[in-house]
Length: 434
Image 1 (cartoon, rainbow, N blue to C red):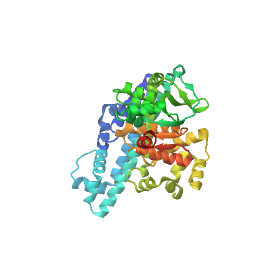
Image 2 (spheres, one colour; image 1 turned 90 degrees about the horizontal axis):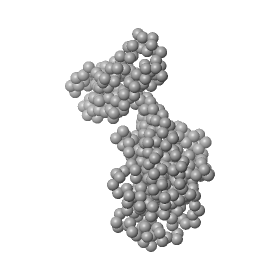
Image 3 (cartoon, rainbow, N blue to C red; image 1 turned 30 degrees about the horizontal axis):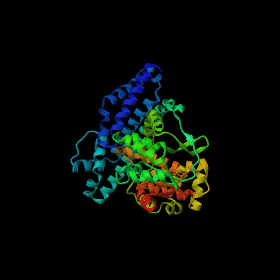
């Protein structure tokens, strides 16, 4: 790779990171044009026109990021011209003074509700058209930048694939005759409370009927949290589950035994890869956010499908294309006709649990708010989906996460999975204290 390509790639990376920092604030995003990174990009654009060497220094990264920025600026310039009458009225009425069309439209967008309330109906309608056009251009721009960042993150993810050290896999498959109870992070936190700790640990050790199990995603949850109390957390998991977890074996998901320290060391050794993977998951979630604006919280369609998801999906056509895109035609067609996905088994069932979790995120069904300030919860929501995969071979799944419980009940119902999802309090009252 020649020096010019490296130079262009570096500028693309710096500019994309600067854009990413200001994603949630349109007015700040508009100021990127005066940043050092953009000035360098602008200079290279001029050199591209004059110097053959720069034209030969092909950099898809630079072309994508800088191209997206210039495309956005041109789109905003065109919108300013197309809606010049109403923009002039608003700028004069509300004393918005700026020579930058991006900053001007960003200011109007930010104070949309306030401005619209003070305009006559004909002007309000015209301004709504202007704002809608502006938002569409910004959304397309953000999607392009997210595509670049996600591709870059996936490159980093695959560069850490060697962190998957199979010598760290020290578990042994075991046959279980008891009823298995899968636990997540908030269940372990409940067990750790002094009120329950000794009683639940004693119950787990003495029970001839139940066996608590977990997965390595529970350790990921722990590593992502404050390290204070981590030893107590690991000790509680170890004693509660007798070091028994659900793991991916060559034959599929199975129950295994592994010392908690071995599990912890294995997860910790893969933390770089996990972080890159989670960033990619987050960026993909935000791409979907800009792809499907019709499903954002507050929209009527979201309110209706949150009341009765299965009935809504079966009887309404508004979400049909989205369901087909995410589940695939065969599964979606089966769902539309039958209101269920019962009959899928093995890897197909696991695949559908994951796809349904993604579909729920898109449709904002019992999910976290999709925003750049909510990265940790979006990644946590992904791990929730993994919990549903691992728990589906168990008899019970205990969680106090209301959204996860409701999503899980819906997914398991659709797929005919018999696992019962219950709260910690319900289990404690009906099994421990009984």
